[in-house]
Image 1: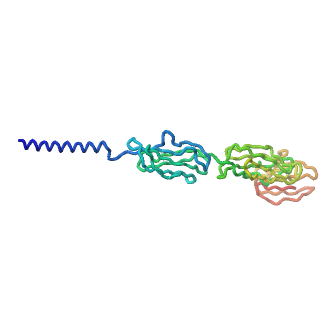
Image 2: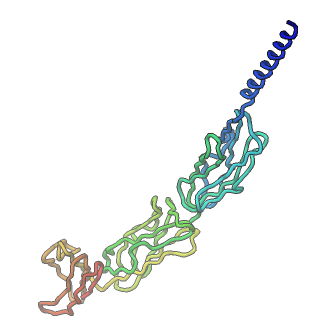
Image 3: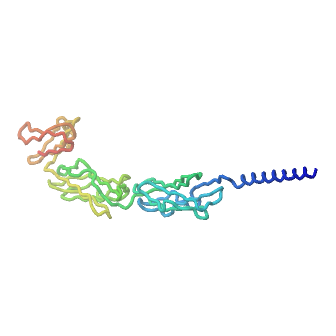
Length: 301
């Protein structure tokens, strides 16, 4: 009877120990849970800076294990091809924080960077920034160069420039100054660039025939944009098109365009479309033009 009781006591002790071991495994956790997210105090999210520069604040994440800060976790950082992060990997400190510096890429607009921790919930963490254009660097001609116009008349096309930074990003809201030489006159002396970095002005021909120019400049940009413009010995302009074959720029008469010029005054013919030539059929006669289909081609009789 006594031996039986001892045996039963041993069995009870073994069962109690076994139950205690099972309870210990569940409470410590055999698969700890890791999370990663932006540092709630100062993450570096949603900053704005110029292209190819670093925003003021570093990017920061916090890593936790079962809700408590985790030290020694390796976070991997990345951004787009023209941007950079330094360092590309960093370890969390005692507070579970890891950080990197972000230099934005060369293209103005929205940019992103990421923080990755393998197997952690919330990974990757995405950061956003807005890159603004850099300083004005280049002023380029877009349209209106090499034109020929009539005496005291408007040139067919406006002169147009584009202002960009060193990476080609357009710069808006900057004043472009237009100045004429040789008697040609821009209609506006100062024009602000639009959202695409463009500025334009109409130009009037000189009072006498000859070569002239319009020079566009921007403060701080060393090289101006110079447009070569010629005022022809002509006081009328007639356009030649594929729809309306002949139209006088002076009185808008068409098919035929009827106008009068004084002796010694010329007429500028401008091709608008189709294939045409200017031919002399009456008296006094003048030298006929060649046949042309080149839009913008001019002929002066």
